[in-house]
Length: 212
Image 1 (cartoon, rainbow, N blue to C red):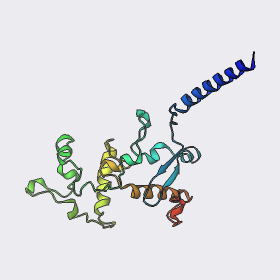
Image 2 (cartoon, rainbow, N blue to C red):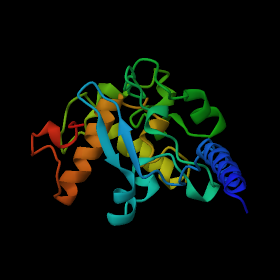
Image 3 (cartoon, rainbow, N blue to C red):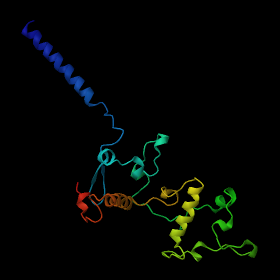
Image 4 (cartoon, one colour):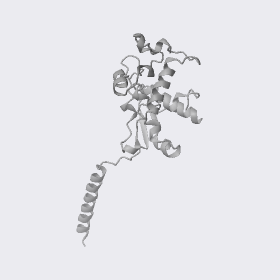
């Protein structure tokens, strides 16, 4: 083969390699089923979260962070931001815009007035007393439970006895999800403190997370 033909062959091979390289470069990369790392953008600086380390090295289950995730259904876990928004509110179930459906509990589920209004006597013809008439907000008393304690004990206990949600692991079933920063801090810092690893609330070093 002459040097001229050899040169043509080299050019052809180079062009083929270039075309193949461009084609392969533009192929969409397949995302891993479980993300390796994720960057959370926050007003306090970006936080690089090592998803794989928490899953593989520390043995955290998906549901430990993705509270509403049910692996048996085969659904992909929702992202944190799908429930927790920067401008979100944490609304008590019995507060403004509460989610408690009185008619459903009394008419459809067959609960009597006395199941919740313990001292109510229907024969007296009076109105059932408010929960806060006895259970006062912000009170922690062995004799009389505070309002939050009473609601949680009464509502969650009944739901779990009846095997219906929401239960103790599904706060969002009654409460609107917390803001993103509050949710992240409570969830992440609380878990780090439980396991005695940093960063945690005791470290008071924001840069351990917000350092990127």
